[in-house]
Length: 454
Image 1 (cartoon, helix red, strand yellow):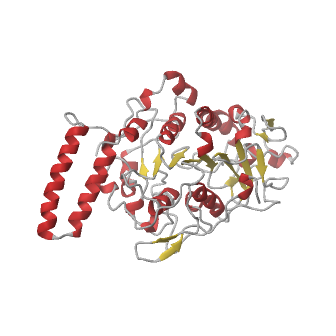
Image 2 (cartoon, rainbow, N blue to C red):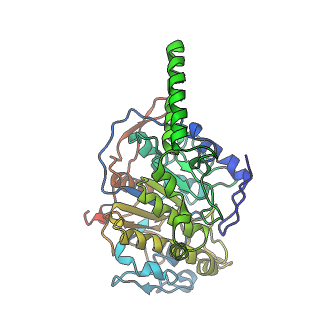
Image 3 (cartoon, one colour):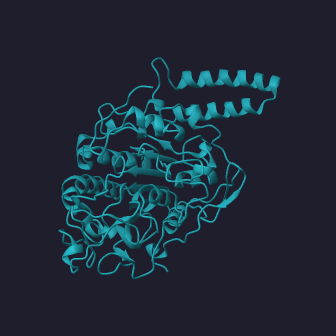
């Protein structure tokens, strides 16, 4: 395996990372492995109100009170250095270093009363990326097959794609701290339902996904001819051996073939086709180009795209919180996100695309001695954009110090129910783990005020 070290602003992608993420089935380990058994007997469900969900995950937990829920009247020990600015919606204010998002407030809703009980990066990530309020038995702070399945795995299980396409892609990083963070795989459903992880920087020169690129001398026609020959050989083998394993292998090879010759999916990763002006508008950095890649995947009707804003705990501002937000974190984040929202709106795709922006929790009201904020999960904010939601509103409220909800609290399971429902899945659907034990996929409630009800 080659060393794919890539330099970027959010952390390095190294050979070690590649090895750590190997069990998840990211692009680079071979499609036959990734696609092993990607079928399900679950019935197809109706299409929801959206075609795609883009989950923008701010790993490390951003300071909600410096971005989405500022408290300018609070004491100096908590209110911080930033003051709120007006948006294009009267009465809705956000932090001062997101001018692009301030101009788009009519297209999103801020939920200011998110909450859960564990201010731990690993466990909070597990909850927010899978939509659970409590870890399943056997799950720890390290990724394992005891974890709850991520959103794309739930979709893959309940509504698999007949053509062998994945139902979810995670990019451009794999969250790890020497061990993988929970919530990035199919967990107890097994590797058959893992999403694809594209662990490459789209801003790097000559970015491409190897498994979607033909080797020299190959073409769609030649690959199809080879597949037909293999089908003939497999048919003879199956006749002789009557082996289910042979049948399974044939199915996996056919799925791998389908993905390789899928021109739409292959073209969506060809980010070099974008005009320089467009690429500049998103920002020539890993996050900006990842958001541009997310737009291209939405255009190819990829159901779930997760974009990690950082390598691991990037937004963990225990020290120098305000300088880091103003100089390093917010500029690329808001440039990429506002460009994505604008592009989807201009192309008529925003109503059928739900964008969810969140971290694993929030940060402490009290500013510490290092001008930072520490871990806090008792209240934080999440932002929902497009997807038929009622924009230009604030849902829920925190107290005067942004320390606790003073209205109804919403939990990770509620966010998960909202995502599943938007995609047309019943959140209460049953899934069966590798040991044939049934589980209710999600136990939350849709955040009804997003749609003007409740």
